[in-house]
Length: 116
Image (cartoon, rainbow, N blue to C red; front, side, top):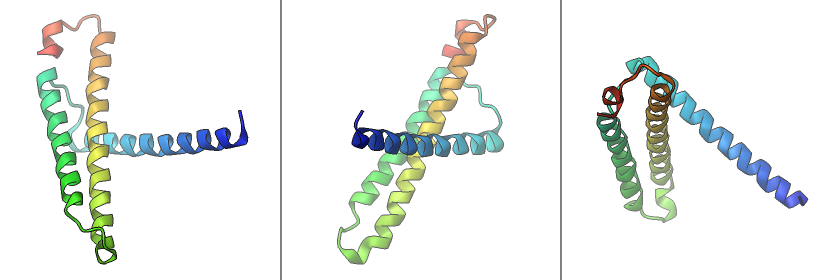
């Protein structure tokens, strides 16, 4: 592996670690706020899509801000808002996956308890 490949790999690993850390922090915040959530899959999907909708709205708001220098602060705020929404989408997806993993690991769980 070339030194450039190693640098790019290290950079990607750093970016991934930061993203995972942000999602983990959001998961902790969610658990502190609502406790452990156990929903059927339709409810999980509704929550996930609601969060994805908020991320979509953040993208649309960002697109309405002019690119000129006079709007840099507004654009920066909008980018941070988008980042926050995407972290929330990822955290809800992780919570949903945790629930699925628990259901798979729990031999006593009946399919209807989780999947409906």
